[in-house]
Length: 218
Image (cartoon, rainbow, N blue to C red; front, side, top):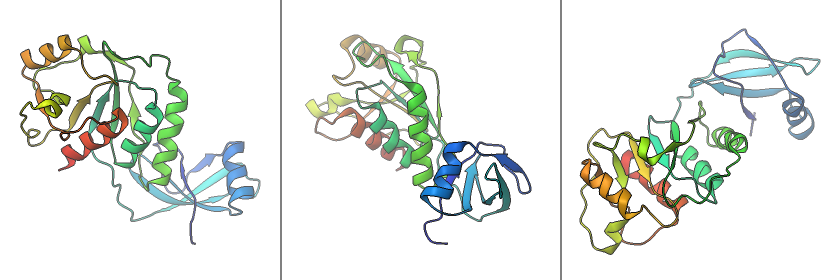
């Protein structure tokens, strides 16, 4: 079937299981897509599924051979005004975990995290992932373990030299709109964190996050 819908149904899926369907999903399949067939995914796997006659359950069928394109990268980021765009783009790039970090210059403290979860679910459905990234509770910058941490060093745009990310690195920190403070840069430098370049231009925070992920992917 062409353009078959893909729906995230949690991480505990298996062939032969029947999963309850909410009204929104039932409406989407029967009224919008006009089908009883779909693909469901979660936990790294994807399955064929069929809506029951009463529209209340999805009957999980055979597992597909689709390999999850997600990776194991953790993106640590300062919440920004366009956090939704940042999460959407990074989810499409396969990020496994999001760690919000409250920095001195973070000025987006009232994020609707319930809405952000919906955004990463939708981005996962659309980008052919078999898993949905986790969004962890926010941490203060002072709570991070900085030793050996890889971070996006915007000072490179002003002439500072930087090295490449260490081989095997799977986590990176990007700063807020306005960048890290002098105090935070000092803490990163003193702890031996690895600052890497995202290029020689100043980037919007949501774009910087995506390029940071690309740097780790190599």
